[in-house]
Length: 59
Image (cartoon, rainbow, N blue to C red; front, side, top):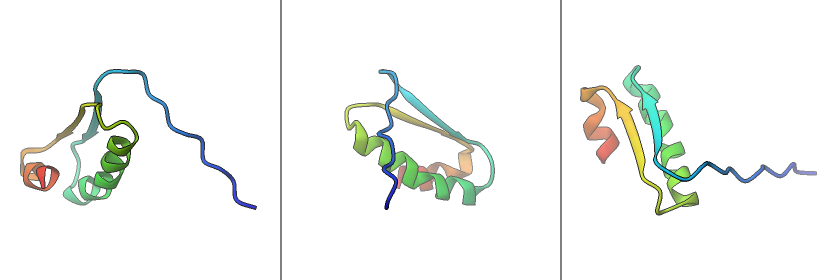
């Protein structure tokens, strides 16, 4: 028997994801950002990271 995951709900407004640590941690967090965007396509998601991760985040 599979347990159903609850549907995530967030208050309306912008969502900030902060990963100011190592580049690998940023890469591992990107699928979460995509998933959250798929739940509410109109929501603005802001990814806070170090300058050297910008190219990866924007790709």
